[in-house]
Image 1 (cartoon, rainbow, N blue to C red):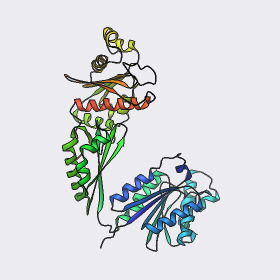
Image 2 (image 1 turned 180 degrees about the horizontal axis):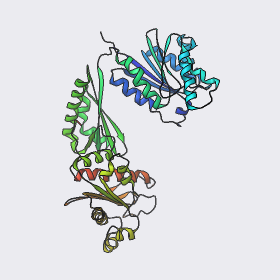
Image 3 (image 1 turned 45 degrees about the horizontal axis):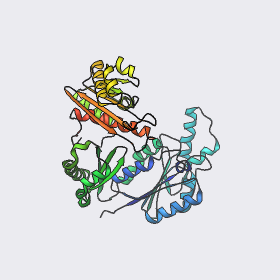
Length: 425
């Protein structure tokens, strides 16, 4: 008979509490455990302090079947995870000669002098198992005692993730934990979180398996659909049915399923369709170009990017008419359209997008406030131009620029009918 296992994650390191290092280990471990049906009910971050770490370990042992720690396995005096956990579990630490020889060999290969404190990493609980770490000197540790399964993993994500996949996953996946959890993310752009929730309130309230949960991002909403079933295929089928139901309501605003970003989706869809794109940017200063070209493979779809802040550049490079600038101003729908036409002609691209606006904090007027942005997209004989006012205050320069770049990417997808995804990609 299967058992519902619960797990707790404890990340150790004062640098995590201070915000000096981004804690990606919790996210990685939580997703991995969910994928094999192990519930994570508690997570914690604790500094390099014996009393506080000991309290966290005791609490975790009192309420979870599986405890995974990250960090605190190094050679220095403040690396105390192994010593603290073993003391609480009544596990004596002894020198493991195999681990010791591995550490000595590492320093010899690197041509570096080894100090005595490195031998601290070769101490292994007598009732535990050392988990060989191919990417560092600190081995992981596993203790299976008193119906508790404890894994101590190194803190660097590169080491932790590799060690988990090689040594921890095989142990945990062999446990009969009943149903697995399977999640898919729906990427929504063009609707705020409250609008999405209002449109989908009936689905979100009545759907117990899968569950549907919204998460707000800058200018976007992510819906996480999580299904529970005995196997991955069954759980994925449940998730896909829910996604289809959601798409029937807000499909026009869905740009991807498990898509990492608008630019990632744009590069993928344009590559599939054999389309190229060019950009002309004023207030965003090349941000659209940057977001596109940060994606591997973008060289096949990106023509060129023109950063045209001055009116002279708009006229001399992009061919914006002097009369347009005099009659409507640099920040206008007419100027945006001529910028898009100019860069498309210059580059020969299939698609072009242009942005002109006032990102602030200065330069706004009552007629044209800070945050006013015009975006124009061109494809074949189609032109799509929109007016936006981004931000709630004139001090949100970077937020305004980011939203403008996101809308430019979205409009490039929409004008080429590339916005709505295939729901099984």
